[in-house]
Length: 133
Image 1: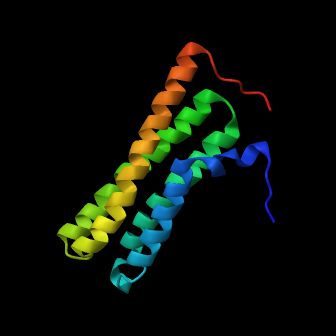
Image 2: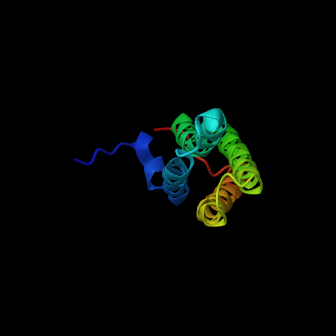
């Protein structure tokens, strides 16, 4: 059953859906880390999950300044995620193919997020944002 309301509009955003895909893929790859590295892999998984969560929370706040703040937090999580998978690759904790799989989705998500932020910054500057329900 499909449930829609104005507060769930973020589910229609391509960037949110791609962030969810990034979380799913990173879980599948990083879940196999040994016990000694569970905290490290968990932090990376959390960074990927933080992207979609912050997009959703910012959208649900309705005010453009708060929305942009949460999108910038999501962008920071993108940086944290990339730094993690890059270091995993260098430490030979993931394969080149696993890195590539995550990085392709990450790169797409990060660029969509940057474009959304730019678009909202223009709306904020132009005063074209309606924050009423």
